[in-house]
Length: 442
Image (tube, rainbow, N blue to C red; front, top):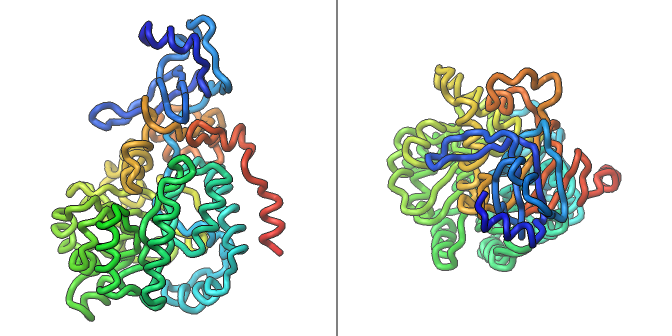
């Protein structure tokens, strides 16, 4: 700690001081390491310093508006759910043990079509509560009635990347509504809400509408968030009908020239990799392994191949109607295990690689790689504190492995977004869950 820093903090109270924890940090090569017995100083919503607890203790008169004693806990960058449909928690468990098309066409879509704005609001509230309790500080959402979701996000304090979904069946009005939402809410709530254009998928949006979306995105500087190559069936159908893959459809429409977040991508083929590699925009993929296992899809997101060509892969849950959960912690563990199985190599993904995907890779996937995803000076103070004193996490021989394979989302004690404590010692401070549950279950 420099003298100038000590002199400054001794006269100006920090907003938040976290002491005694072990902090996950990234070095200049993006390798993960852990700093023990550390302190995190937060001011104006940002991390001002990561230093030793002793240094802060030794500063005479060091003042902070709020303090957290985090001994026995690990401070991680807040987890990011890179693709979900938050209001769909209202449909959790509604359609079980069904093939994908039957699940969607026979059950979920007919019910979804009748959801009211109030249903969406209550679902979003319950989803935000679930994610905050699981250490998720940011989520990327692709749904409808998104003005309602944005209002919930603004109230409860979480960070979100939101897009109003549109289909070609809605006519030009669907795309216009998606655009108007993106413009109206871009960088609102002090920057906690960012927005994207959100065409549903190449199979539900025409080539002309995809091209029009790409043009709007480039004109207004908006990213795009959509489903594509979700599974091998979708890819095979596209090949048989059009002679090209869904990824090649996106390329032809100009969407690979935009900043693009592709949900799922388990149907990405070897022929797609050169197309993605030469994309002029920032292309990323969100993987949600629990849903793929539940639907018995034969493939998973080709993480190793995508990373080899420089495509970030973030972690996601998809909606709770298919996944039953918004637990990104589980997605992190499953991603590691599924990749080991697919690759036939226990060295991929390692625990440290899984943590990298859960933090910096996920931040890049949602276009926020410069502001969140790591605990470092200048970054937004999106931090979770994880208690590793339980019997299921002891002893600790490899801290990264303990976090990924032994710890659970229920071990998150405290969740902080922009320096504001949203949950402390497992108590939610910005949402009344019993009231939401009572109203939703009616």
